[in-house]
Length: 309
Image (cartoon, rainbow, N blue to C red):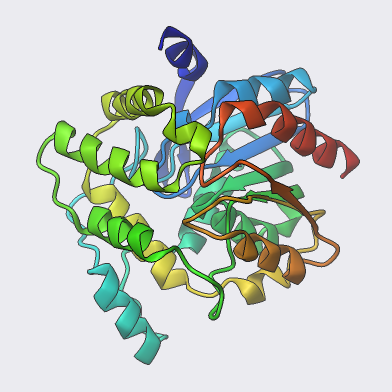
């Protein structure tokens, strides 16, 4: 347990203004080294990027930045802005695709990420995004190509029609979590543990106490139940990213877990199939998580890809 808290302990946090809002940022490594911008996924704070991964990339000669997306952690909260019911939003978007139902979309979150680079005076960076962060990363790589050295989406998707989705139980718990009105930290913790147990690798499931401590750490940084609802709305609002993927020119490597029950590996293969000359790496024994035993190999993959770019 002590090791887990050491792994995720923050030492040099800072608040910056990016895209007109406050964003919490951590900057690791030598500022003269090439930068890697880590973009985290749905509901997840920057602490969900393990420091073993961050420090491993720093040891390979990179400056590594991780940050809280809007509406989670210590970044800006859109208080009082209501998100639509996710099921109703999906139905509405099917029949009225041009109707804007969400407070913001993933394009806005991509501009937040580029704003982080602006605030840190970083001209170009390698973009690494996990899950929703990989969706945001597709928009960064396509719409802000002049800022991107390379792109690595992890356990992500284009969200294109026809792709396999989460299995029924995972989908049910996901939407229940998105709609939930947890009144206390303990209620939110139990919801989060139930969901993470469903989507984690076997290794992750066997580390329940570590997952619980990490969730408590995130709650200590910022307990904010309304945020995930707006992030879910942003994903639904943005919709199909396959046309976006086709516009990506940066060297791209897609990493996906072979046992991912939330975003099946076919979704990662779809990113690779639609980005010109993209490379696909399937990680056996990995679910929708970042298992500690897989981190050294992932560091080597990401560092090698970034250096080759």
